[in-house]
Length: 246
Image 1 (cartoon, rainbow, N blue to C red):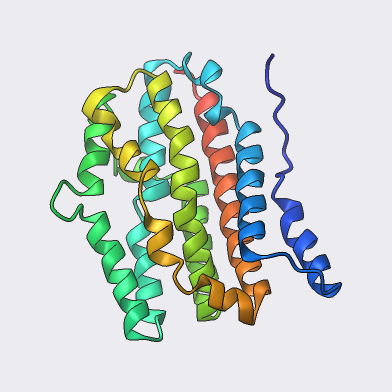
Image 2 (image 1 turned 120 degrees about the horizontal axis):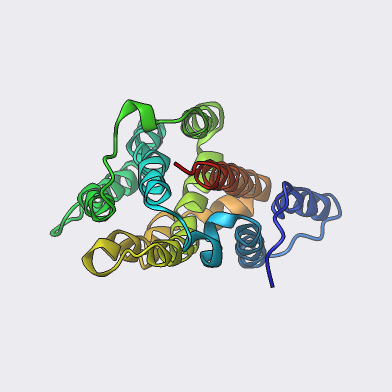
C-alpha cells in the first residue's frame, strides 16, 4: 500500500502533551518521555518520501547525486554546532564531552567521518562541498541550530545536543536503507553504519537525568526543537530531490 505524506509532523504534539502533564503534576519518567519521542520520530519518517525505499529506488543518477550533495550540508556543519557548545560549556567535564565528540568525528584510529562521507559520495559520482549545493533551506537548518544554542541556557542546549545524538541511531538506520535502495553497497555504506551503531547518545546523556529532575521542561524543549527542526529539513531535502528530475 502506498504511503500518504502529510505536512504536519507527529512531533508537534509532544511538547504540548508533556507540558500539560507538568501542569497537572502528572509527569512521566525521562525514559518514558524518550520512548515516546523515539516513536514520534519513527512516525514522522513514515510521512517523508526520502525514507520510502519503494520510491527512492527509482531515483535517476542526477537525483542520487543530489542526495549526496545536499545531505553533505545537512551534516557537514556539525563542527560549528559543537564549537558553540564547547564555548558555552560551564565545566571541565562538559568541555571534555565536546572534545571527545570531536575525536569521534575524526574517527579516532580510523578514517574520519568526513572521509567516510566522501567515499559514499564518490561511489555515486557526486562532487560535494560546492557553494551551489548549499541550498537556502540548508542554510536555514544550520542557522536555526546555531541560533537556538546561542539563545538558550546550558541545560537546554545540553538536552538538545543529546537529542541530536540520539537521532543518529534513529535517522541513520533509515538513511542506510535509502542509500542501499539507490545502489550504494560495500565500503561506501560505512558512513551510515558508523552512525547507525554509534554510542553518541550514551556519551552525551550522562547529565540528562539530573537536568530532567531539576527542570523537565528544558529536556522537553531541547528534544522537541531538535526533532521538529531536523524532520522539517528531511522533508525539504526529500521534496528537493523528488522535484529535481534532469
